Length: 190
Ligand SMILES: [Zn+2]
Image (cartoon, rainbow, N blue to C red; front, top):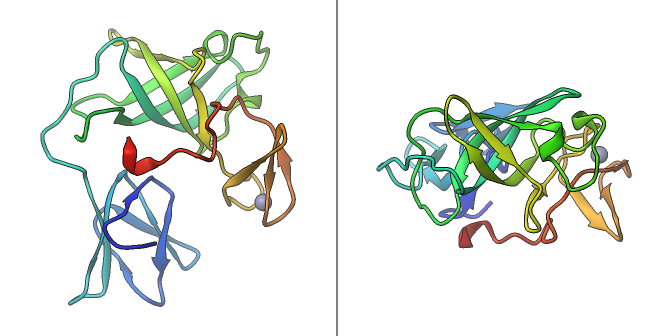
């Protein structure tokens, strides 16, 4: 990963042989990954990787906002997500980011089991349909759905291939509800 790049949670930054994990990062099996969305920096003096939030003035979530959310828990009836970014706002989020996508709000088609459409660690583009008393999201819109998904076997990013998602590491094929620009999202332009 190049320095000063905007990174997403889970993105590989470096290895534990090269750097130590610092603020906004974590280490897993010798790989240092981002734990939040932000800008990747290296503290050269201490050989430490860190991810700084885009800016420090917080943004308040509103109904209608388009957001990026990371899948935290999947159940047949709903998906529990963590909002990580509001599109068009270069700022971190103030307050609650825990949110849910009900099975009926995933896709225009009927979804019997929400946990077949999104998996833990995926990043989805979603719209806020309710803020109080709890944050509710939908991915029913035309531009909405997963923009990044990880292989459930080896945790590498899945690549869109024809109409399926395939892991280029282990060959595993998986399904998701995806956005039309899956795999082609320029994170820096968000
Ligand atoms: Zn795989």
